[in-house]
Length: 118
Image (cartoon, rainbow, N blue to C red; front, side, top):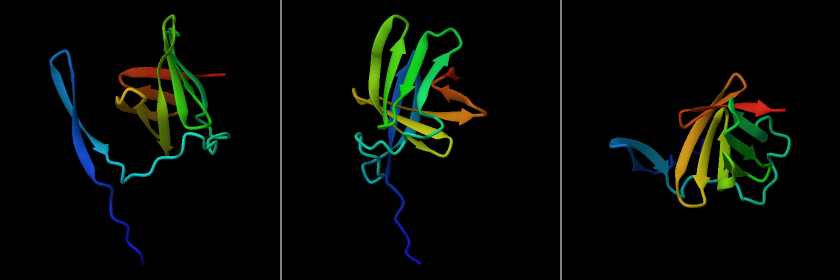
């Protein structure tokens, strides 16, 4: 049996309103899909996800890219994402990272609750 070496993790700190949160960030040893890859084309989570008030909108694209709108600001944030099971990792083009979980058809991300828009 061939054993693979687990990915190396570094710690990254996020400071918001004086609260320090430390979370692991995978190095490039962890593989991520190519942005041109459309393997997500038929995936359940691809599509539009919105908060109940419609203020935040995440468009998960089939090529592993996302486009987030905030209020009147279209394309406020863009980057790539990877889904593993019910977990989603985001890598913003500016270098910010975040994650979320899909539970019972709802996306929980960064304190927000997003619902699938049909």
